[in-house]
Amino acid sequence: MIRLFFIFLLLFASQISCCQVKLIRDKQSIDSFCNKFMQTFSERKFTEAIETLKIYSVIDPIKIDDLIYTVERQMGILGDTFGKNLSYEFIAEKNVKGVLLKRVYLLKFEKMCLKFDFRFYNNGHGWTITNFNYSEDIDDLLN
Image (tube, rainbow, N blue to C red; front, side, top):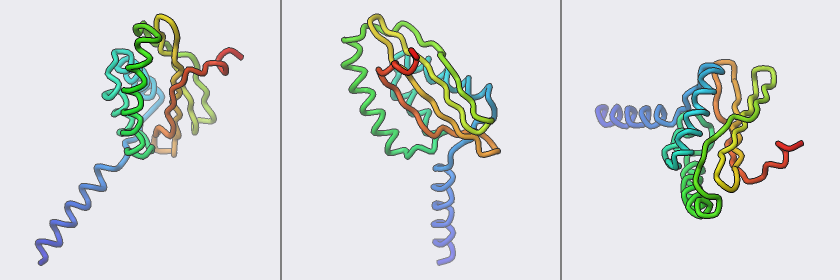
C-alpha cells in the first residue's frame, strides 16, 4: 500500500513539473526566443514554432494546440493568396519599467505581410509569455 502511494505521488509530482513554465532569464534571451520563433515560422514550420510557446508561456496548452490547428489551416490558405514567405523583420519594442514587454515583428510575403505581437511579463525572477497574436491588421503600425 505504501509503495502504491509513493508511485502515485511520484507520478503526480512529475505531472506538475511537466506543466511548469520555464522563465526567460533576460532581455537578450527574449530577443533570441522571438527571432528563433520568427525564423522557424518563416520556414513554414508552423507547428514547431508554436509548440515553443508552451515552454515559456502561461497560455493554456490546449489553446496553443488549437492555435496550431488554426495556423496550419490559415497559412495553407494564405500561402496561395499572399505568395511565398520572403523574410521577417523586427519592428518595435515597448518596455514598461522592466515588468511588461511587447515585441512586434512583420512576416513579409510577396503580396502582403502579417504582424506578430509577443507580450511578456516579468515577475521579478524572469519573463513569461502572457500573450501571442498574429494578424493582417497593421494599421496601428502606420500611426
